[in-house]
Length: 215
Image (cartoon, rainbow, N blue to C red):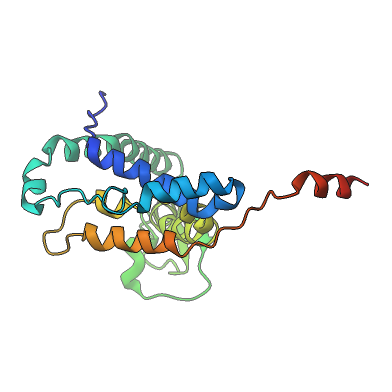
């Protein structure tokens, strides 16, 4: 299966790279010299020609919609095909080898309406609704694990995702003509954030402090 061709917008890639540098400067400014910090700050906030003052041309949202390649959507669908085939294959094997098995029991009773959901492959009319068949358990785990993974991503990986989050990710999403991002306000906000950074060199006298700690 061939991979879909990825088309890159050079201007958006350039903006992403500079905004990533801005994020690193704001977080790690204390590890560079004062001259290096001022030089980088001047690059972003220099009047008229600085990165945050040199506004790119605002794209027409309708033009962006017209330029979208339908093959991109088809490529996303093709990427999901192996996952779907794998899940269907696992469901078939479970139904083939474990048909008729009861693998779980829920701690509370349910009505008969849930029989088709909790007891797939079981044709016992009087079977207690607390029992769950193997095939039903497979589908419950497969569809229910997405919520658990989302919770883990939110609580465990939240800090890492925040530090690696690209400030332009929202601008790279599919365009909604009713909610077009305002680049001018976005750049003004980033410019103000850089102006409020209070620089402090964290490596001053670091060699003496290191020697003192070794004593």
